[in-house]
Length: 98
Image 1: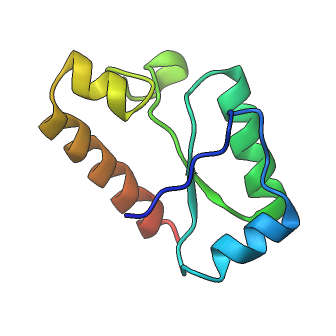
Image 2: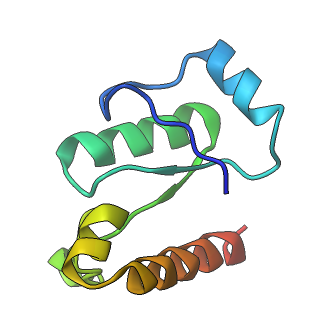
C-alpha cells in the first residue's frame, strides 16, 4: 500500500495533485481521523474527486469502535497486528462496496 500525507487534515488535494496521484493507481482511498476536520476533508474529497474514505470509527452513533482514531492509536492501544487486521477489514469493506 502506498501512502501520501498532506500537511494537515484540513488540506484538500488540488486538481493537479489528484490527477497526478490517480494516474498512478486504480484505487485511491482517503484515511483521516474520525473527528470534525478529518470527516469534513474526507467527504469533500469524495464529493469533488470520488475518493472513497476509510474511517476508523469510535463507536458513536452505533458505529464500530476500532479502539483508536488512526492506525497509530490502534497499534498503541491494542497491537500492531490488530491495527493491520482492522485496516485489512476496512479495505475489504470499501473494495466490496465498489
